[in-house]
Every structure is written in structure tokens, then in C-alpha cells.
Length: 155
Image (cartoon, rainbow, N blue to C red; front, top):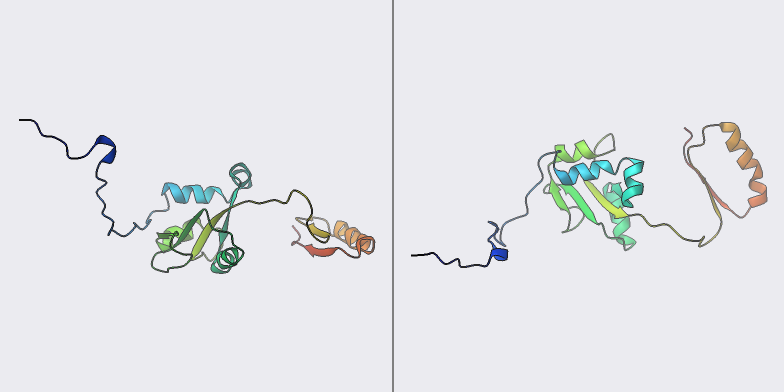
């Protein structure tokens, strides 16, 4: 007597039911967290076209602006970030965080760049290592009086 399978090959039982809760990531060596850790490097951000935003305020601001995370990770049981975010043990999430104090939620977003200026002129100085360069830029500010100025911290 031969046993006849009750399901087709592509419909194998997964071992999980619809009532099962999603699993919590417990190890910092999880492949998803390794991918998240790679986004801390400029090369990987440029290659993937994605970036990670850490912290409840940034995630809430992105949602308010209508930007939804491609992937999201939160401390297990916190409920932060929404239903699509994956629960991660606090120690594992702290291990992949780039913040010194760790974080309770991290979202991965697609990078968006404007193709052309859209609004008033803005000058942004990033990583200026020489205070003299900054002084020269500020002296030329009169020529660009209508420009909005903001500067990042000096190296």
C-alpha cells in the first residue's frame, strides 16, 4: 500500500500556524541584523541606496512625512514603529546600534535625492576641517544673503 500525500510539493506545511506570534530575534549574528550593521558604512549605504534611522523621534517623523520603513526593528515587547517592525532582544539591538547609548527602534529607508534644487538656496558645510575655510565661507555669505545657512560640526 502506498501513502498518498495530502498536499502538493509546493504547498508543504511550514510548521507554523496563523496564530503563532512572529519570532523574536535574539542573536546579533542574525542575517537581518548583519545587513543592518552594514548600513553604518558609507560604501554599503551608497551601494544599497538605503540608510538606517535610529530612535523613536526619527521613526515618528518619517511616518508623519509619509515615508514608510523598508524594514524595521524594535526592542521586543515595546510596540514601537508599527506592526511591520520585527521584535529584537534589547542586547542584540544595542549591538547593531551606532548610538553610544543604544536605541529602542531602528528603521531602514530608501535614500531619496532631489534632481534639482526645489526651494530657496541652502548652503550646508559638512566635515569642514579648517576653521579658516569656514571663516571664508561666512565672509562670502553677504553675496548669498538670501541663502539659508546651516553647518555641520567641525572635524
